[in-house]
Image 1: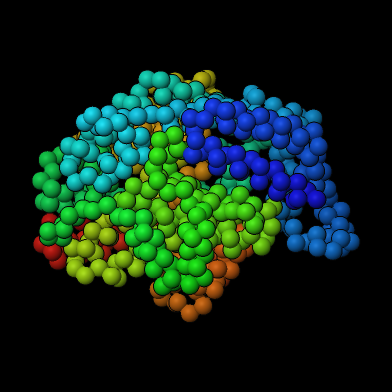
Image 2: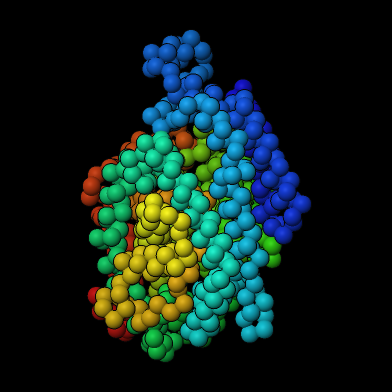
Length: 557
C-alpha cells in the first residue's frame, strides 16, 4: 500500500515538473506545481512520515519476525535496509512531520525554483542575435574561432554578474545553511556523510576517490591541456590558451568543414553504437525515440542542460535535451539514453527500489557514451579523424572526473564557510577561483592555461549545487568505474553484456561493492581509484599523444 501511494504521488509531481521544465515562463503552471507540492508535503507529514520512522526504530528481531510471517516482504529488503540505515540520524516524529509539512513554504525549494527560472530567462547578445544559455554554451564549445569562444565566455560571465549571482548566492547560501543544520541536528560525521549514506557508500571510499583524482587526475589533466594547447597553436594559430579554449573542437582533417549533426544522424550513431554492444539496449533506445519520449530542441523557456526522468515503472522514462547538432549533443543523447535503459531494466524492482544509488546511477549513461565513442573510433578512416574523436572524448572524461571533483571542492569551501554566516557573491567568486587553481594550476606557474579571463561567476549556473549538494563526485565515480568496466569488456567479452544488464536490472537492490563484484572490481581498495585514473584517462591520453606524434605534431609529455 505504501508503494502504491508513493507511485501516485510521484506520477502527479513528475507530470507537473516535466511540463514546467519545458514552459518555465508559464506562471500559472508554476503556481499549480507549487500548490500540489504543498498539498503532497502536508499529506506526507500528517499521514505517512510515521511509516519510515517506525520501520527504522524496529529491532532486528522484530524485522526478522515480519519477514518470516509476511510472504513477499523480503522482496523489499533493500528498501527496508535503506530506511533502517537512517535510524541514527532520524529526529522525533513531531519534528520530522513539521519539517516535511513546512518544506514547500520555508525550505530551500522555493528559492531554488526561483533561481532555476532566472537562469532559464537569461538571454545573451551575440553580434545582434539574442540567444539563450544553452545555445551560447553550444557556440562556445563548437566554434573554431578563439575570439568567438572568448566572446561567448565573456558574455556568459558578464550576464551572470549582478542580479543572477545575487540570486544564486542567496539560493546556495540557503542550501548550504540547511545542509549545515541538518548535519548537526542529525549527527552526520562529515560534510559529505549524508550524501554518502544515501549512496550506501562509506566516507572512506569517497575520500579515496577524491584523493586519487587530486594525485593522479590533476597531473594528467594538465598534461592533456598542454597537448591541446600545442595542437590549437599549430592548427588554429592560437596565440593564447584561455579558459574559453578548454573545450575547443580539434578538427585537423583536410578540407573538412564542421557541419551540424542532424537529429536523425545522431539517433543513427547512438543506435549503431548501442547495438554493437547490446541489441537489448539498442532496442530500448529506439523504443524511447519512436515513442517520442525525448524532448529534443533547445528552445526558449526550457530548462537548461539535459536529464532523464524515470518517473514511475510503466510510465517513464522521459528525456529533456537541448540538442543543437554538436558532437557533444550526440554524447549527451547517448548518456541520457543510458539512464533511460537503466530505468527500464530496473523497473521490475518496483518504484521503491528501481532507483540505483548515485554511485551506480551514472554507470549505464557513461557506458552508453563509451560504446558510441568506441564505435565511431572504429569507423574513423584516417588518423586525423581518430585523433579528433580521441581529443573530444578526453575533454568529456576530464569534465566528468577532474572538473566535477573541482566542483566538489568548491562546495566543500562554500559549505564550510557557511558556518560563519551567509555567503556573499564575493566569497563564492573567491572559492570558485581557489578550486579552479587547485585543480588546473596557477597562471604563470603550474597551469597550462595562459589566462583565466571571465570565469569568476561561472559557479552561478551549476544547478547541482542547489538541487543535490555533493552529488557531483558521482560523475567521477561512474566515469572511472565505467572506464575499468570497459577495459574488462575488451579483455574478457564473454558474458559481459549479461553481467552488465544484470547490474542495471538490480536497480537499488544492490550496493556498489556487491554490484561490481562479478566484474572483479573492488572500489573499496585504496589503490583502485588512482589505478583507474591512470588506466582510463592515462590510456586515452597516451593514445592521443601517440597519434599526434605520428602526424608530426609537437608532443611534450
